[in-house]
Amino acid sequence: MLNELYHSLDPVAFSWGPITIYWYGLAYIVGSILTAIVMYRTQRRWKLGVSLEDLVTVVTGVVLGLIVGARLFYVVFYGAGYYLENPLEIFALNHGGMSFHGGLVGGIVGGALVCRLYRLSVWTIADLAVIGAPAALFLGRCANFVNGELWGKPTDLPWGVVFESGGDIARHPSQLYEALLEGVVLFCIMQVLSRRTPIPPQGTFMGVFVAWYGVARILVEFVRVPDAQLGYLFGGVITMGQLLSLPLVVIGVALIAYAQRADRPQRAYIEE
Image (cartoon, rainbow, N blue to C red; front, side, top):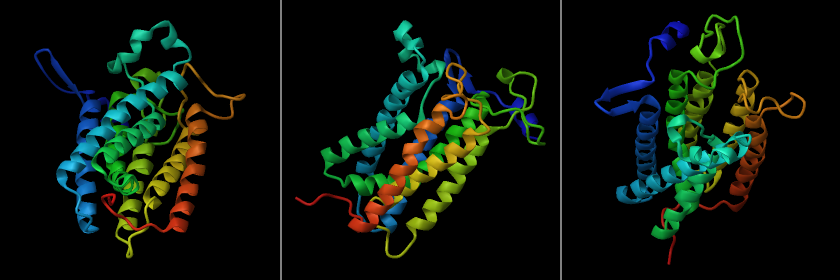
């Protein structure tokens, strides 16, 4: 069924004259909007009083930082020297090549800069952002599936998919595994946690998000084919995705422990 679905999809959402819109680009746009909506609804439920204008500005800063960080991390950790020989390709985003880990770092930096400018609490805004972020991750991984990229190892399971760039063999639709774990499951966890009374202290949601993503990515990488230019590292025992995800698990657990110890209540704005 998934194989038939994949072959019925087109990476191009629609085109009009010289303008071509891809599902991957729409995933970024719609994902950002959904994240902002979830952030706004959550802060209203928490009675924080953050204005919609401030949230939109923060999300814009996060998205810009995400794009820059995702591209830079891919160039540095996945480029394998290619971009040193072809520096102009760094700016060719339409050729693909984005790293979630870099996007996370860049998004945090971009969001933190906006928060400082508007005197918003970085910790609370970060918690709000990761409550909505799984929706964007889900759409992004679905777009990876439509593009036929980041596929998995060969499989004889009934939901195996023959990807055009993966040879004439059925493979794990690892993009959808990640969409499920990083998107659906994590979104449900965040929604349940955000409705707890009292509200979990600052940093709790960021810790859960980072730790869960790290675990989910490590697990899926066991059935996902690593980038061809890198292959397996350290004698074929680990992928770059797993190597970059291991610190996330540690950082996430540390953030949760720190949040519980500090026990700082959620607040929107920094007091003068």
